Image (cartoon, rainbow, N blue to C red; front, top):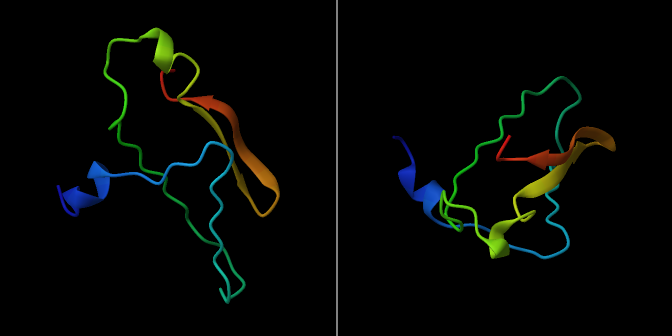
Length: 71
């Protein structure tokens, strides 16, 4: 897999992670989200319940809300 090192660490924040693409030209862009499970095991535990749910918005448009990686 190309760039496999990208999938071995994560940026964590209990409240929010925001990324900004400043100075982009006007136009349409394709956004690809990649996921890698590096924290929790495949067997659900009490500590992992509800921890893999998140929201994604792009320019104030909700793309996913309460997205669950288990589903």
